[in-house]
Image (cartoon, rainbow, N blue to C red):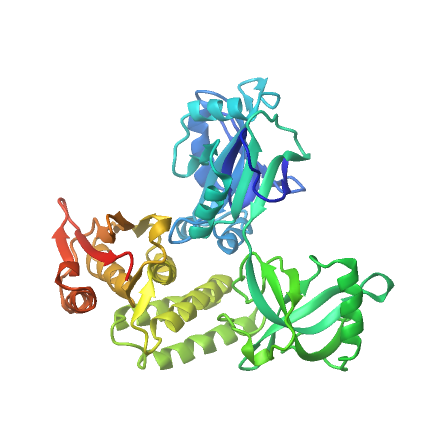
Length: 511
């Protein structure tokens, strides 16, 4: 059963689920085997982790509908990570550790020998809950019955999820059909782009636009925009672009045999799902022209060179990026541990030949982390900005430590805009990882919490490692908190029973 795109439904009789970036998959679980089938062509996925479903099938044989996901450092689904994993039919033990997957179950199509598709969603959901799924590698996706759909969508926005699927409580399951009983509302971001070419469609109107963003080497191609236009807009754009034609591509290293190239002076806004590791917009959709804007005004996210290549060219390019990054480390801020910086760059260098796509993704994370962390003249940030940067840091560390580093995030959406000293959360997290979790042979769990506490926001960074040193980093952070907010807002450091450290500080929710 497929969802129809649309706004969040209002009124009673709806249940809401989060939409997950992943591979839609049916799981036929029997005691002797688990078959995973997904995609339009019935592609069989190789995910040994999901063999735990056999334990469920020993009690009740089931046919499940759900999504296979690969999680980032904060437990959010990452489509690029999943694509790398599912491209390998026989994953090695190292890949299973580095790119683990999970299965989020949201529907039940058969229980024992009895089909359940004619039952209403609400009843199917109740049967799913009674199965007692393992809860980590195979988990029951959360569902919010008779909730405020907009509030669920707002929560998805705060946590960087794909969107929300609304399902009628009384709807039956219709295999292979797209139904208005399921409505998907996807979250999208916007980006200003420069138009560098176009491909004709019907009657000479614009079929698609080729767009880019300006980088140091020139105009970097970021994608082809083929949807979101009205017919009138396609015709108007064709007339406008006809006056800007030029013989050669304005993009660095990009070309297309059927394209018409234009002088790169026209700006537009597009919406998109996310940036891919090779610097492309995923599923870009037309928004509007931005007249009067100069290409120099485009805010460019970190893009690593031209689109991903294979073989020696890619490894040479990645090696050069790592070399330049190493040369710049000495100029980076002293607050961020050189121990971390050099170890990460060495780790990325080791992946260049054995896993270039992973090396490219890690370089993107490192570049974004560096761009944020080493800004000058910044005194305050927000909880949201700090968490985004901590996520990049933890993605890099998990590439080193694998399952030795586990993360539990507990952040209330209401505290995301709260201000705090720049890098405050990053320094506390780094202190816990480097001095408490890394020295422990089996690693440990890092818990990041930010919740409302009266008129304040209480931030807690705790771990179950060997115990972090309360050295110069935490002393410096304590001084910054006290000088910014007063003595009552200093840093509190406690030992955790059984090992580990808990670091806490209060932030005023309003200045």
